[in-house]
Amino acid sequence: PSPISTTPACSPGPQITCGPSVGRVRNHFLEDLYEKGIVLPAEEVRCEVGVFLVPRKDANIRMIFDTRQANCFFEEPPHTELPSPEAPGDLVLPRGQRLHLATGDVEVCFYQYALPRALRRYFVMQGLSRKYLSAKMRACFPPGDLDEEVQVSCRVVPMGWSWAVHWTQAVQLQLLVPTGPRRWLADKREAGRLPQEHLLGAIYSDNFAASSPDPSSAPEGPRCMPVSYTP
Image 1 (spheres, rainbow, N blue to C red):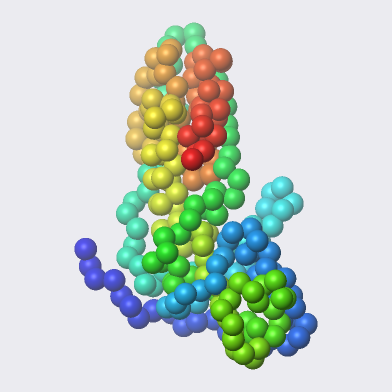
Image 2 (spheres, rainbow, N blue to C red; image 1 turned 180 degrees about the horizontal axis):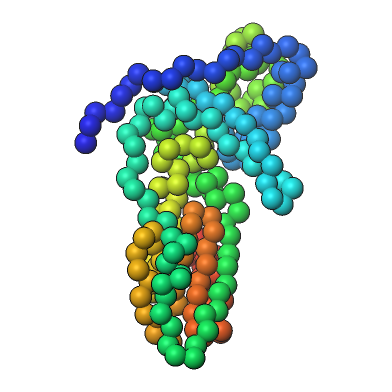
């Protein structure tokens, strides 16, 4: 493999001028992330990341980390095999059979997985002066001067990281192998013939589907997800 570059190829984004009102808002935001287990006090800083929010279809908000600079520290991930829309169309069923489908979803999928401690230094949020922190949040950091800035790093796999999809896809497939479908749809692979007893699975990061000619078998796919993902 080629050596990993330690010099980002892109410039960092603009820094935010933090007054009292902005500081209080940022403290509330950081405290919320900390309580949800998304961030931890940073132990080391190699790279800073930003955050932006986008609306979801269900009227909630999706939080994505701006990891463009952090991605420069990593090699490109391998090709990730995801379900192809073409594959179900190529599926051959026994004569007279219909395909039954059941689906499931992993809520906030990327943030369910902890980031290895050695990688957290590449995903550190911009610093905030201690004087803007609540007493509760200030207690999470070692003692220091009120004008000193403190930073938090990602504790979870940051959505936006170049390796996030590859990691979560590989891990979830591995977890589902013992209890999940016997066959999986993959990108640009022919689906082939599906015998009556087979359960065919497809997973795209957080979205899961199971298909079977047997209407009672298809729901077994989503039902295996809590069993497989529970430690």
